[in-house]
Image (tube, rainbow, N blue to C red; front, side, top):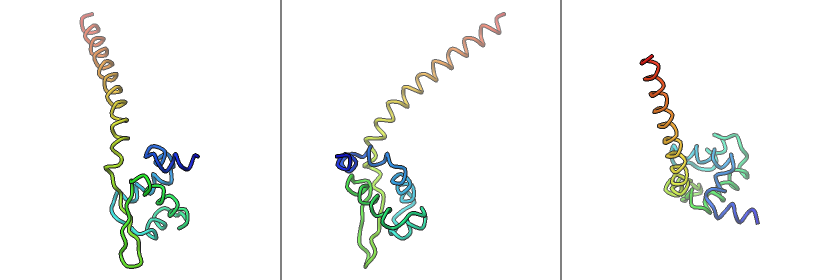
Length: 113
C-alpha cells in the first residue's frame, strides 16, 4: 500500500531524501544513470529504484541514446508543490509585514518620548 501512495503522488515521491538528491543532480541537465551514481555515491540499483519512482509520478523522463538511458527533470510536475508552498509563503510574508508595522510603531513611539 505504501508503495502505491509513493508512486502516485508527487509529494510522497519527493519526501525521500535520495529522490530529492537525484532531482538536485538533474536540475543541471540530462544525465545517464552512471553519472547520477557517481554524483551521489549511491549504488546503481538504488538510483534506478528511485528513478523509477520519480518517473512514475512524471518528475523525471527518460530517453534512449544507444545503450544509455538519459534522465532529465520535468520541473512542471512540481507545480502542485509550488502552489501548496506558495500559500504558506504568503502567510509568512503577511506575518512579517505585520511585525514590521509593529516595529515601526514602536520606533515612532520611542522617538516621541
